[in-house]
Length: 288
Image (tube, rainbow, N blue to C red; front, side, top):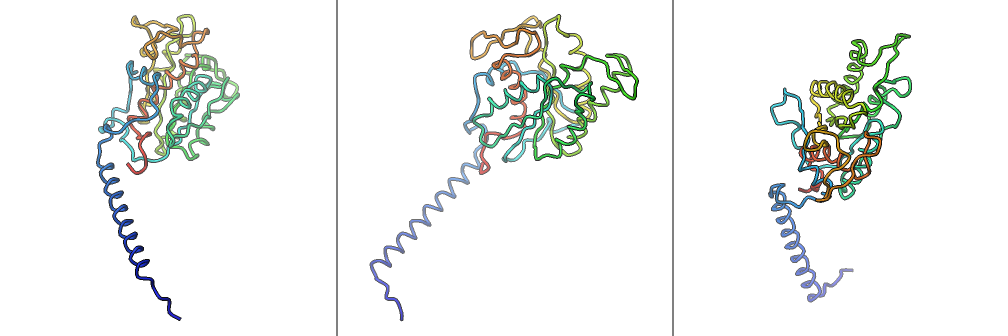
């Protein structure tokens, strides 16, 4: 039995279908126009006063000299997982990054840092083994902060290598190299944040020495070394527990002269995030 079409109803359906096609065409055109817009014309979401403050005093960025494209090429939009490795300073950077990226829907920050650990004491926690395991995870970016607990002797096969002696420097450099290699061989970009300037009586010269090792090895593997030392110093280049954030002078360093306040950790982590955002479109949508 054949169904009889009602002429008025059939005409209404036809008109509705035409309208839907017109709307779809208009939406597609709008998407094409949006995709053609330069990134600078888009509103960046998730920038806080702390991050803006870090942009004013940008730290030194050291990249591999062999690169001719100005560092890491800007990637296509996607979801990003940022792995944070390190010691107690790494813990703080993790918290800071979580705060700074809380409005970035496509960014996940994962904590792999561990307090009371370091590269020197592999008997307590072996960061070389951990780095190899972490690098096999689904991560796109690695941020590292090491050195706070590494001013001590290393013992290998019953032999002690004391801090800053030739054997210690060679062994420590090899371990840093191994950590970097775990990520570089898999094409995972590494952003190594320097040890910050510390109070003069709190290992200032020793931390500066460790930074020279980090800088050299990171450059060798094509990573990005973020030198925060001078950025966190006062106008005279000296340690200061205060910084200007949001236009106001505020305490950014902890009373121990090494670590940071919660606000300070956002500032410290902000230096890393600023560089990552220049390489990756963290705040643009997949359709852009």
